Image (cartoon, rainbow over all chains, first blue to last red; front, side, top):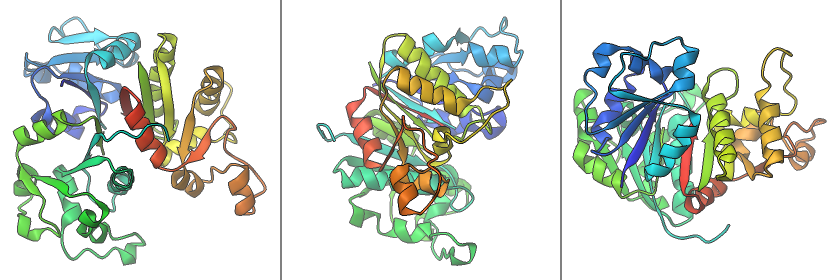
Length: 96
Length: 123
Length: 129
């Protein structure tokens, strides 16, 4: 059973820290809304573990004018892909 | 209602009582799941552990005292309650401070609970 | 695949309701189904037909209504969330002696059992708050 976790608040919410103890190998974490500021912070993305798949929602990144080039650990996906990965994972847990 | 198979619902309650309606929403939904005879797990973590403190009385702030309802969770068919050990410890609390005795759990055990769940409501 | 979408957030004061809308629209465009939309807590405001929005802004309530009608979706609003926020259908308006019906015809007032039923009968349940 794999889970997609969505995080929708900025890093000041500490949602990633709350969520990580419950994230299993093979799970995915998708940053949406203000959660995409996690993607923008290189200090944070350096720590992104490789046994988790990391995603950032393109529409929310673009809306906020965030640079995407240097984000190697994160897959940038659009809404259509968001729907697709909901199918790939067995369930979705929202962190907000 | 269509076919009502039995599924496993896990509710994660991560927010302190009274400051928002999230603990009540989480509880109300869990009670509904229990009424419909679903398997229910209830997890208290982060500030959610404050919902379990003894001696709550919210009358003066015009709210239902959530601790009182939580005391009787098992009567509503919610027997699988869990509390995150780290959340308790980091707030200087122990099981003796709580109105019920949930199962003390660490990250890995909670992962197992989540992995066995069909639906997770996280508030 | 059958989805249920639960919306906890009011429109305009945060992005979550708009995200839920975009996600719902995209999944329908992609040929998936929505088993039920469930508006809970402040999410009930999304079903308020009385709301008026300046012309240069998106009217999220009207957008939901249109989506629900276009795809003939099952859309439910939690009864206690709705009535507390002044969202009433004809029956509730009558019961509380109110002169106005504020709930879109496209949504129905429902209990939390409808949320549990939706979780059971959907392949995926997503929460937006």
